[in-house]
Amino acid sequence: MQNLENTIDRIKELMDADTEQQLRDELSAYHSADIADIFQQLSPEERIACFTKLDEEKEAEVIEYLTPQLQVEILGDIDEELASRLISKLPHDDAADVLGDMEEDESQAYLDNLPEKFSSELRELLTYNDDTAGGIMNPKVLTVGYTMSVKDALETIRIKAEEESMELYYVYVVDKHSHLLGVVSLRTLLTSPVNLSISDIMIKDIVKVHVDDYQGHIADIFMKYQFNALPVVDLYDHLKGIVTWDDVQDVVEEETTDEILTSSGIVTDLGDDDDDVLTGSIAHAIKARTPWLLITLIGEFIAVSITSRYDRTFTALPVIAAFMPLLAGLGGNIGTQSITLMVRGMSTGQIALKSGWHYIWRETITGLSIGCIFGAVVTCVTWGWQHHVGLGLIVGLAMTLNMTIATMIGTCTPLILKKLKCDPAVASGPVIATTIDVIGLAVYLTLVTWYLISV
Image (cartoon, rainbow, N blue to C red):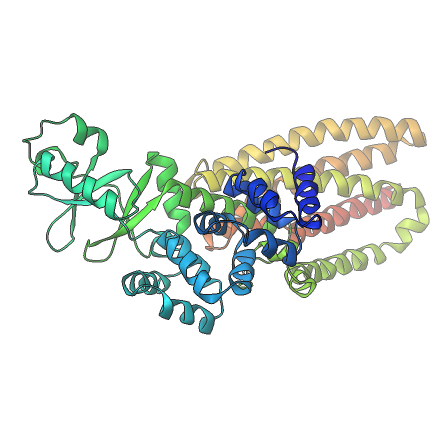
């Protein structure tokens, strides 16, 4: 697609000129994902005007690529019968996601209007938690019986592929009660003698997930084994559906977004989509961003309280106030670096709790070494600037201690939170940064006070 801004300008020109056929031709030339991007930049009225110019197949494809907020908005603005038809054209997992984002009475109305079999399958999907395998799986699975021959299996696959839209990643082998027995790749099927039994060529050691497994765990399995799809089973090993790589891609993106927002002190578990923090109501944005800021405010009041206790120190040596932003800035930055490394390491599986002490020791030595380097630089600069060797040594020592302590805090906190089964990403929020500032300030002012007393 050409430059998005130019494309939007072109579409708006066509709408203003009331050239319906040209607008229809222009939109049909774009990929559905590109149209979804265009819709993000249009007003609600313009979106509906463009949406109704598409054919039904294209409309259903565009719905798949839209954000949940726009999906509900557009489906609510068009004819209910058309909306029902569009939902029925979506993959089961996408249709369940769309209905799950609607009000209960609205989704119930659509479920009542959908084909009975499709509606029944969606109702089952909606019983699962959104962030579990059951909530993101597609119940349409390509299966064959374990007693079939390769020839019969290929014929069954051809018929099922013609009758229903199915993901053709792997073929799963089941018994007559839908118990999962094995898996066969399409490559193996196509290259095996046609008279062989499926049970002879299937893989029995199956990597699978349970309907109640959380999506983070599922993403880890995909990253480890690099499969295109994973079967989903219930407690009795009945095959319930599959989770595909594109579902997991959405999960990884969602969890990365959640981690970024959490690390910035933005609450993400308010029951709404994370997009709403940026594109939703101002009330939602305030609700998401205020809690941790209030806690940070309390922390800063503690810093003010500590500073007020050293009023005599400031009176005796006022220049010490000039170095406070320097110490707080570098201490906060190196602490944030350690937090980021630890949170990311635990997220990717590089760092385990049992090896925590190794990383604490390693990061502490790193922080001490960097602190000594920066402390020496600060000592020399302060000495040359203020012509005060004692002040230079105190500021340099405070810098070394601040950076070492900040590194220790930044390393230990995510590990402790993980041990307590809390999200380690919380460690990189404003609260920990404030804690590092408060401790660094206390260390600095204490050292200056001791120095003044000693001289």
